Amino acid sequence: MHPQEPNQNQQPEQPQNQYVDPNNTNVQPQVSSSSPTTSSVPVQPTTNENNLAAVLGLIFSIIGLGLIGVILGIIGLKKSKELNGKGHGLALAAIIVGIISMFISLVVFLMILLAVPSLQKNAKLQQQKIQQQNQQYQNQGSFPQSTAP
Image 1: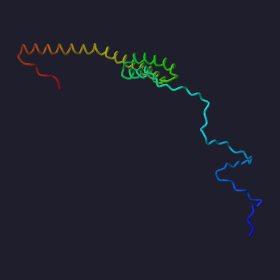
Image 2 (image 1 turned 90 degrees about the horizontal axis):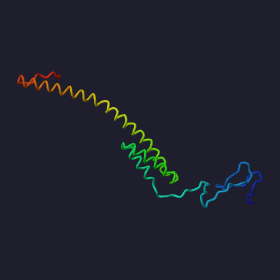
Image 3 (image 1 turned 180 degrees about the vertical axis):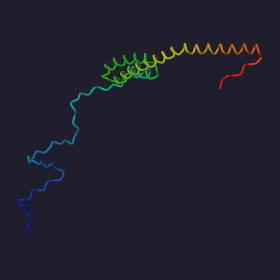
Image 4 (image 1 turned 90 degrees about the vertical axis):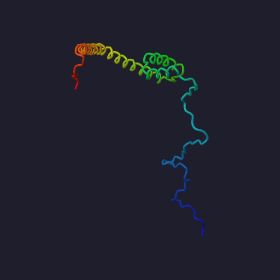
């Protein structure tokens, strides 16, 4: 028996892990297994310095000290430029939350300011009612019957 010679109509076997070009141009992709490719994005030096003003600004804004939070947020925003953008988002959040906190504080203050005269008026009426009841007690020797339900 003769060893089987490849038939001219049959294509030679391709290794299984090899790229087969459908256009048969015999161009294989360049794959490097040594190291990952490097990007063209410049790498900024890393620093361990944090934007403390931005962090404190956000904390003060959250706990209701909006003016201090806004001031520290502005300082943190300026410092973030020196730190290549580190803490920019925190500083911006401190300013926004601080402004919202100041607005809420202003609304609460105005509500209290408007409510105080009404509360004083009610307190005076209650005080007059108690004085009348005390005078009746002194004159009659007993408190009048309560009209409360």
